[in-house]
Image (cartoon, rainbow, N blue to C red; front, side, top):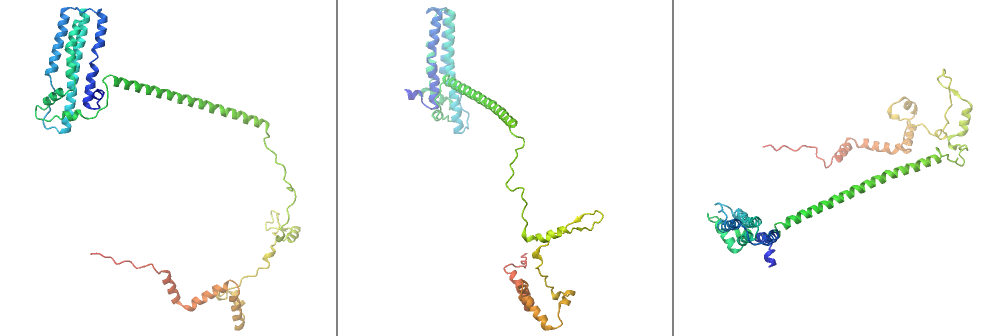
Length: 356
């Protein structure tokens, strides 16, 4: 029975919709009985009114069927439209049954008795049972929708999965749950705002206390702390021995005048570096043709060759002169070979164009 009621399909949803309204007339009947005082007798026209409405709605539930489906529909579209029309048909039957019961309750209140309500319940409860999606009801509705030759696929549409819902309970529970979640979110938002406000107040209070502590320290501390003098800070520095301090002291005793005689300023000579006196002048290249080179050449050839060899054999120029002499002895062939070696592996010729 539970599986029959809680079936998670479209058919089960329609069945739950009908079963929800079956016990609805019972509380209405109890409330009306309390109002009229439990009396059964009522005015005749009220009983006739309730009976006529009940008979009319019952005939409509038995005769009215879903409209036929149009021709040329695809199977998915046909199944969707058939399910939609069957839902409308079931809702119509439920509405007709509830209308009969409401009119019977109103007639009973007006007539002062329960006979109109009893007549409405007798004619309205069968309409709720007819709205139940049973085999007979589904087959008859499918045949009505296939009157123009289009397959309805109603059974396939009713077997589709659906959530287990109830007509009034599920929307009410969903609304209450969403409202509860919204209230919890609002309370959480208020807590976050209050926490942020407390943090801001705490941050504002901390700098004030910090500034008070700093101001108190400024009043007690010295503006400029005095550093103690280092040991030996006032002692004279030692004279660097290699700078010739004796000569510098002698030069200090005899100041000289600068070229600017009008200003009358004296300029002291710089200290002579002792290691510069031992540097010998560089040799003059004889092959450059300068006057100093001509003066330096000796009249005899033997002394010139000896001096030449001596200069080549000593100093860093010997290696350079030897390499230059070897290069001159080889001639232009060595230059061409060196150029070719430097260009090895790199082609300098452009490829021939291959135009059609």
